[in-house]
Amino acid sequence: MMNTPASHSLPVVAGIGLRAPHYAEVLERRPPLGWIEVHSENFFGGGAPLHTLLQVAQQYPVSLHGVGMGLASPDPLDPGHLRELRQLCDAVNPSSVSEHLCWNTAGGIAINDLLPFPYTRDALSHVAARVRQVQDVLGHQILIENLSYYVAFNNSEMREEEFLTELVARTGCGLLFDVNNIYVNTVNLGVDAKAFVHGIPAAAVGEYHLAGASMMGGCLVDTHSARVFDEVWALYEYTLQHIGKRPTLIEWDVDIPALAVLQGEAQKAQHRMDAP
Amino acid sequence: MNNWDETLAHFSAAIRTGAVLAPGALNCPHYAEERGIGVYRNNFRGNLHDTLASAYPVLRQLVGEDFFRLLAKRFIEQQASRSGNLHRYGGEMAEFLTHFENTQHLVYLPDMARLEWAYHRAYFADDVPSFDLPRLANIAPDAYAGLRWQLHPSCTLLTTAYPVAAIWQAHQEIEAADFNIDLLSGGDSLLVYRKDLSVDIVRIAPASLHWLAQLQQGTGMGDATETTSSAHPDFDVATTLQHWIAQGVLVNFLRPSP
Image (cartoon, rainbow over all chains, first blue to last red):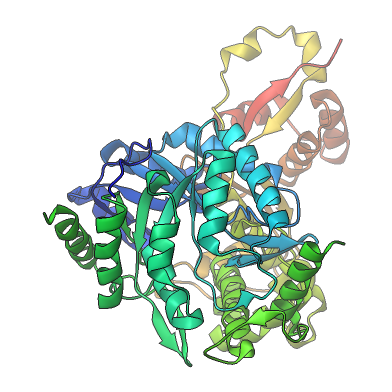
């Protein structure tokens, strides 16, 4: 069943993740890009990074994608981090703000990565309270992204899609469905991708992510360093059929290619969205 | 600690220190559990290494890429990250280098680390509106002494033992650089701050540094001027005040509470 997108203002077209190597080219040439997404933390504070983003934001809709909030950390949310995100939102007026379903800080020590955790009922209450806290500070809904992970916890009490569904119900948050992440989890941990697509509330999904991964020592690592895999395109098509069209991002963070390559990948996503 | 905290604390230790998890804690059907945790270990070290390399580019050039890798590895073992924002990681590098046995012969490295950290922090510091000069005209002259000035949030004042500003400069454009620097020519009095969009490293008079450092600590202008003048009899507060307002270093003042 098709559903209408959640109430976000990103255009329902393909966009790209904008990283430092392409700032100058994007500002000078102003190529046709549906929208752009950046990592929020890279623009905390002021100076040249923020100045660049404000210029970009005059040309394109901007999505702020956080990698450091640690929504599921056992430690309290960092009030400084929240304040800086709020300050950035006030300056940029983004079309969308998103965070990951993960943690990064325990006992005052941070691991600057996107870490998995057991999907328990206790964790659900904890994460829901923190999503509400972030939404209260920002004054609007955020999207929560499903995670790629390399080990799963045996003491999980539910699947990730059940956790996310309940999180949406409790907080009114939206979802960012990273199609590549589910594919990575399928390969590494045998997660059922189609069950995930059918398990999340379609109406809450406000954005898709697509990226390329790397097989390393028998483990598919979500490196964001390659073209989107054929299997991920196939899953994306399945997702379009069953959830519907949403703003779709090409993410590329390592070994970043020419802008034209990113535009080419975005074009492939657009063709699939436009297919009857 | 409840189960939840404990599970995550153990997982964190497994990533950072190689601690072994309780058997059966993780599910990993297609490869060894250590392989899965290994991805997180690599990310953990790699992210912190890259963060240090980007905060300390001159330090990295001075010791070479391979040695920097070892130095960063040791630093990472000793200094945990405390923030979800990686730009905050690495501030203890100068202190670390003071004790790091393998670089004791490079005596100027801790000073260089202080300079590069100041530069890094200035780059990411908040923006603030520049000072509105007419505000000063509304202050009665006898109230000047009580004003507490605020410096631009990007400002760091540095007194170094070695001429690191010249070394830093020489490493910005390696081809045209003048490496004929006498290490024993004395230290620098430096102000590192962001002016417009770029970070400046400015050599300043020791009297200016003395005065600005006190203002930065919250000392009122009268007291700061008095102690600066007694150490530096030529200190001219009127000129200095105007100069640092014009340069965007003094950005605001608070009036003393009545």
